[in-house]
Image (cartoon, rainbow, N blue to C red; front, top):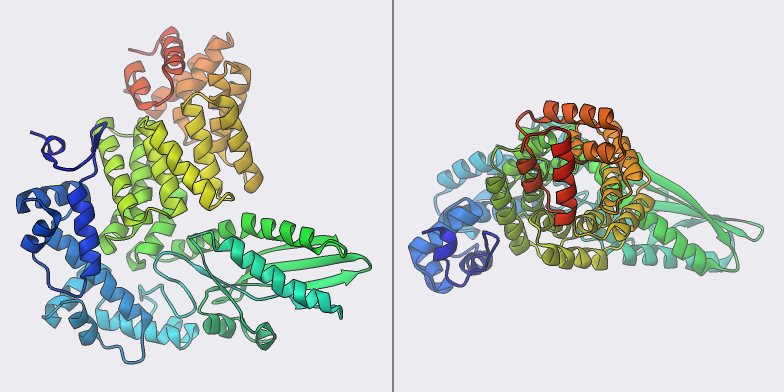
Length: 543
């Protein structure tokens, strides 16, 4: 009998199980990280047998209940050490989280995080009293969270009202009003922690590192307001306070008579640009460090561009990083969500020997991420992508609707909404959503280009389909999986030679592909799949 059939109170759908006892157990553990806990107590609270609880934890979280609880307590202890309170001691922290044997705690901690708890505390203390001092002290330190602002899950941005280069009193009010408006808009973005300076005049002329330390942030948004005649100019920039380096900047002009319109346009520009630029800076900082020195956040942010690259080799490399992140911090939802999406890509792109196994792993990790954090836009978007892969379009639609309600500027959300509509037979809506993502992010994105091509294919516009797919493949040669439908686009246009060349490229991508394995990987509507199967058969691909 399978685990799915043995579950009591779970939900079974397309081979996927969401065990209610695991949900209850994880919530119970979070409330009792400092208390003693036995499997008997846990099973009793969840209303299942110990054997059942063990089986579900192994299947769903990859660890026994007590192993998971130990990793959770270690992660909480690490958080406390990184806060570096004045009276913090390693033994106090160990005792607070139920580790009565200090030597065993230190051994487990080192195995989990690659350094001793006293090292974490020492380097966090150095970082709190000056980043440069911490940097000089120990090149191999794995502590990324310093007093200038990185929490476990998100970078932080301090917003300073603009300096005013005019004498007009209304511009001083506008500067503070603009800062508050930008902060209110960015607060909807859960992947970024926002703080606003209470007394901006005190901060002017001070060193950025000191400002960031005072605010408790890593990044600073600063700017200047100037006036020429009836025109008002707002000049904004984001700097990395640790290095005083420029991350982003832009200029916005408007009429003196309509400062509200200028505020709205400036806020919209900041919403579009700041988070991608900060994420790029975080990725670059993580990329420069050896992977063994990164914590769960650093590993996840380093895996992010690989997870979005959309070809099997990148997904596999991302999974290596994300698996390590989940080992370090079992309660970190973004790592689980991106890992789920990577497994889903191996299905969608025929990138693994067993599509059914990859599909099951993707769905399991998606549901785990949903338990750990049900409201993070990145988590929700990754889960939407996974359930789109599984053909569960209603669930995927509900998830992506939640994302776009939380953050209508989230580019990946619009991109995945485009793919959801392309797969579910709404080509014109799909194209509109891909184009919305393009307007929010001007960088060339081959996956969106290919998505537009697939939407045109669904609508029977094969010339446009071939054009967009070919352009996307040129931008991202590793996405050779697109030859599965690009070849058929050529065949529908009567260009058999181009179709056969595309089939040859498909054989180089994966020699063992057949019509059956291709169709089983794609969640398009049956009419779409029938055309693909017919075209591949005409071009000589084996059934």
